[in-house]
Length: 330
Image (cartoon, rainbow, N blue to C red; front, top):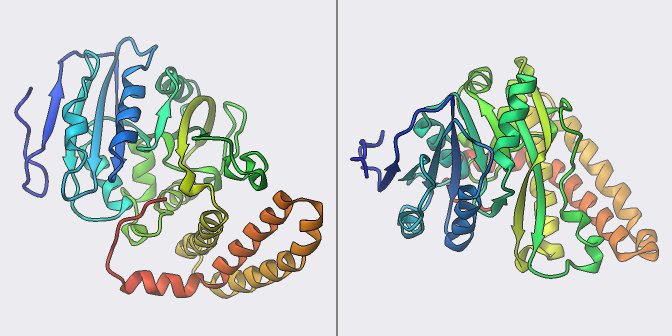
């Protein structure tokens, strides 16, 4: 094991393993984690099973956002394939934006891939992202996130459709609205276009990744989809509840307006009025929708929650500005 270099805040890195080996290209895979040891272990096992990366130097950086270093044992027991490198650091400042910015500081490569700690990549995930980047010269390549349930999803979720993210044909140019860090390969050039880092004002709410890609796209970044780059996101039973879905929609409505306001500061009132109209319309449609099916009614309820979120976005933004930063778990 190499002697770890001091971290920017003066604390030593807890783990650093490397088997030296130059490649024709290099990439950093960044994993932010917070108190999900079993799922992180599955994520790392999925990374070790990657194929089609001959000649590629891969460094995996795990950033633990728990000041108690709860993920240390998982990483210490992980054995990356040769010649991969594995590095583990603790980011004590709470919030997913702080953790992701720590990933950017730790990465030493031009290309950085992000994957969440509750996701497992398919064996050709990273190779597909790199191949698509090479063929399209994109500043960011996004892959598909497919839900993985512990059991059959609730009937009202339309067999899980309400928990499914959109997908697009490989090579499609996508807008910032479709962008996320749950499955992405991005370049240093994109970060430069976006201002260099994730906005830590969104540390507790999420949405900092969407804002980063909005800024990058406005500055000329090319965002491309790669449908073959698939990761499977674990959705535990606790998330398969209507209350969780409505909270996510409400918070999503707030973040949608807060993100738009960063580039268009006069959107607060128009978006609040639009949110109110949307909430009222879909609330009126709830009863007729229930006569069709529970799934249709739930879809309308989610739209009501999103509209209410847009209505309250200004207050949420002011509250976030004055609140202590806490951990965000999506």
